[in-house]
Length: 225
Ligand code: DX5
Ligand code: ZN
Image (cartoon, rainbow, N blue to C red; front, side, top):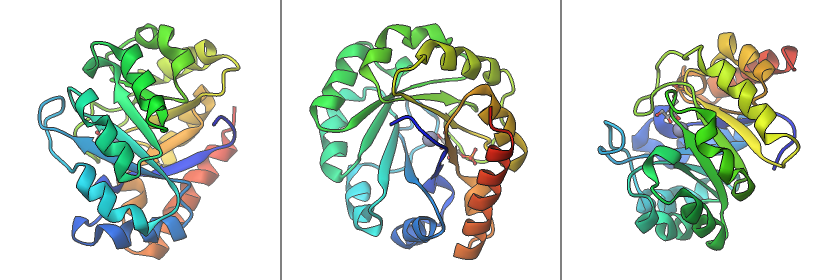
């Protein structure tokens, strides 16, 4: 899955009363992936949606459905998210006692496994599962809410992970506070896959989404590593 820059709008910042249409709108506006933030009110202090909602909106876009599970435990729900139509399933290292087994289970369900780490978690926490994943997600805010400020200390972690990943075909994704004024430094540190919620859904119309996605791409490409 490694390669050029990918932009993944987080539907967390969309209008939930028109979720299917909001997904179709970012799809037409140039999104590469659709990022789905699943929160349980236990691992993170917020609750969003689960497999039935993913299944209901699956028809709104043919693009890669990138599920970010902020739930503990994750294992009992993996199959339901796979059946709902997720293409990638990312779990948090902090939420999985037997992380290696969980990542194998995701692949066994036919999905691309990803592993996420919170801002306070060192990159070494996932060093020994890198051969199990297609994606590493560095949280650049504390998960739970959209619209928070990017945490600069995560840039060094992105650089270290880029080195740890080496030439493995793994996407290095960032999530939280990604905006035109932060994406250049994040790209330079070595990330290739960018989640953005508020920076894409601001404005509320498809034309805004197109401009917002283009602005992110432009600022990422100018600062290419
Ligand atoms: C935070 C979520 C993010 C969030 C990003 O817990 O994982 O995907 O929606 O929102 P912004 O881009 O507004 O920081
Ligand atoms: Zn997310």
